[in-house]
Image 1 (cartoon, rainbow, N blue to C red):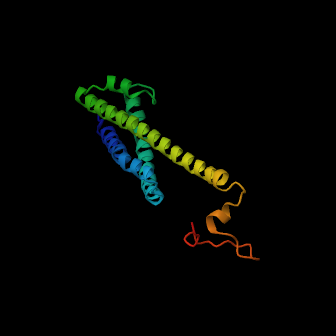
Image 2: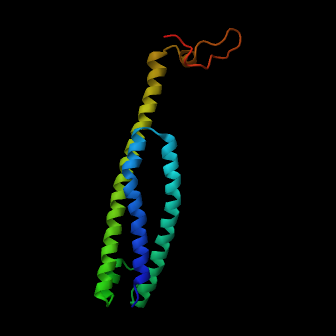
Image 3: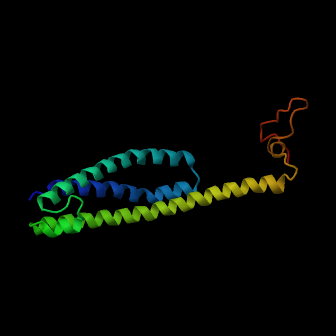
Length: 168
């Protein structure tokens, strides 16, 4: 029984997930520094990688279904059931190790993404709080534009847009 295709797919998936996990510290640092442009570039790059991983996942499911059919199992049988029926014990152990690695990487990536989500929500909350602070406490009469940009030019209704020209 040839399991080499499934092994190659699992190894490629694990490699793809490993690259995401490796970049987690960079992503966290970018979020913490509020470098929006860098985050957008990173997410754009990751978007392409996600498409590749979805394709690999589809290939893995198809190959697993084919292998399960050969072994007399339902197409969607879990990997553990499949491994128990593979006659080549060395191949089964290689598949088990790859499956375990893929599961570990997926868990670490999920934890890292949750951490990124917490940081992003905290950053958004800080922005919301700051805006409310400015609106309520620094400018109680509701003239936030005048406070930020200077008073409107007489008779025009247009504020001076230079933040540097406002005297303290």
